[in-house]
Length: 89
Image 1 (cartoon, rainbow, N blue to C red):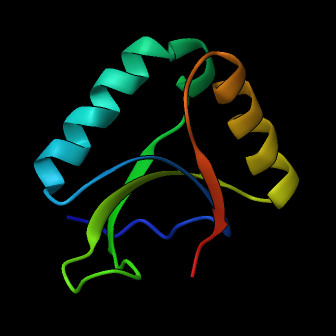
Image 2 (cartoon, rainbow, N blue to C red; image 1 turned 180 degrees about the vertical axis):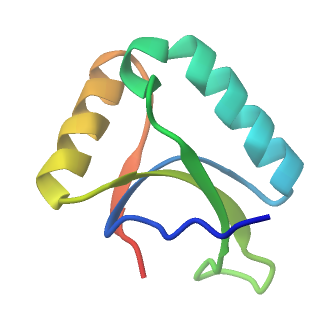
């Protein structure tokens, strides 16, 4: 499997303690918000959380700039979804 280099900014649209559950959330969101999420490929990565050691699998779509990420997130929120914009490390 090839590694995908994440874009500088990410829009987190889902997350779960299990990778399979996070992937299933993405499938459901992509169907529900297809007008906004079409053409965006997710990156699922394990991230640490401030509370606890376990961490979560975060589902993020990439953006090249903060403005682009904010715009995608705003469209998703306007359609009834939820998201968080953050800089990828």
